[in-house]
Image (tube, rainbow, N blue to C red; front, side, top):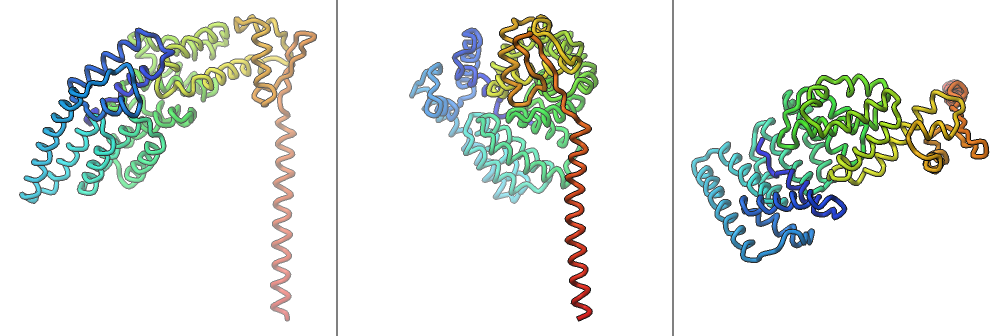
Length: 395
């Protein structure tokens, strides 16, 4: 598939919109974005950054914009001439391919509306199921580029419908990556983990992200969503993850995060969580909005895992295990306990944390009694209805 639009530019735009990120990162993103706009004559994207986003780091030049737009018009006229020639020759396939090229061109220069319009025309004219699915994948990438989550979600469902009707193996696997990335962006980490982990061994969606990125996203989603045992089998011992670690230093904090959680090295776990927050969550356009939630949920996960092994534990020993102060731990646990996110109580006078595990057997008994009552009620209603129908027949 043609890598249009270029989703790395959407990441650069996000970086420039986030002043809290390091200045070096912003300078790199600015240089890449300006180079792409000028080399590819991206007049619509240039206009979008100026009017819709008011991105001050990208200076506006009216003459440059007119020059870019004129070149866009030349390219589109040439593509439309190919379509016109195909219409005269009666080549239906060539007409559909022509509209695909028009749509991809508009997608490449950053005009979402014109791109979607052209791709919808191509979709209607395309007879093959596989080609229709490929067109929808391009439309999905437009939604991802412009961070239009409702639009992206609808188009993913449209692809799913077509694939269920007969999509091939490659496109089924490609959908896993697209859907996994979408689920990650809307904080459905459990579903994202399953989809992204499944896609690792069959990854082909290089138009969406790199293989290193999809491994990164899979580890992040699995870290917060999976239990201790599946985290070990699906992530820590994953051949796909292990094969990348020696050559991809950026994955080291993620590997440390999952490994330290599994082996109960909580001090290393907290340090790695801080690195992951700074290097993988806050600078990422898909994850930045969920960074606080992610870090908080991972802290809760670490606390819960340690407390599962004890009936009572001193605040000091637990604080030492995580490498934090007693005051920090007391304050942090107090955020989870009222919401029943952690089953414990704090005895601040004696400096002790007491776990109060839920009584699973009692809960199961109460559920059984409740379901039994519902069943008896239904049987009584059924018996009454049968007696009434019998009396009517006698009468």
